[in-house]
Length: 77
Image (cartoon, rainbow, N blue to C red; front, side, top):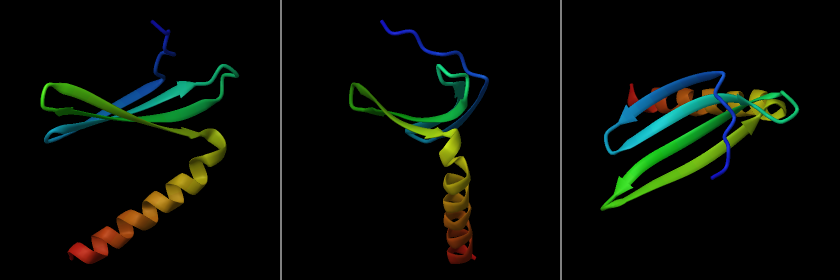
């Protein structure tokens, strides 16, 4: 079984049948990255989807996420 790096920070959002985990971990070079995990249950099977966002990508990722939330907030008001 592979060893996983310990989390420097963790947050969890339980959303119905899906749960999202937001973990900040270090690479082998000790650079932080964001690991987003979506966990869901489909029938008897657990499914997990992983998304890694590395330090060099954080600014662009944050900008796109903020734009998306702004769009969604404008559509729901």
